[in-house]
Image (cartoon, rainbow, N blue to C red; front, side, top):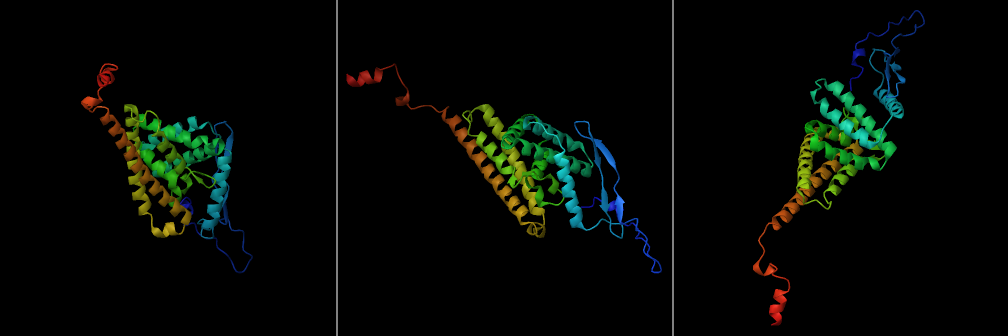
Length: 290
């Protein structure tokens, strides 16, 4: 993480042995103050004194990480939310639109804010949230045309803890992961009464493509992360491995359901045997009696 690289290279303060050391102006440096407004119009003050070491670079990484965690909690505490049916579609649409964003850092910060919005919404609405997420994702697949971008975002909110660059995008509720609940809702939707209908088949094909894309990106990204990094974070490693297994299982399940639906459709078009065709009511039974 190089959020404070602009401070690197700042000269250290000069000390004199013949007199008491004067206050070092570089020991602490006030961060640039910025003001922004939340959705209520209230101004939020962003910025505090950041610890800078004697060379002008950031203080120890642990302290900065802890401070960042506090800032994240404060931000989310003050973040307003709305029902999942409002928040989730808006986030997915905005993520899709960010495909045109060429500034990777800006896009990353935007996605971090979207992840925060999802966390706050899930915290507020609980069990309703994963189901709404699956439904919103299904609807998005029907109309959205930037699926690749959404796949990357999904991987970040499902397993962002596996990479230092995406850890702030990981969406959980306490110890609960989001992805098992969302994938479970998607699988549940395939068992609906009209699962053999044409619209259901089309919806399954879109979900099938999403799962294939998610599997490809997940395997490429998570396998490319050094083993040492994941070994240092066992919980992130377990989450990544479980996610990959779940994606593969979901892919096999959608293939199975799709195959069964096609079999039902084929059976409906097959010609019956002569004795399976019903004649005039009662004709067969009367013939046998005679």
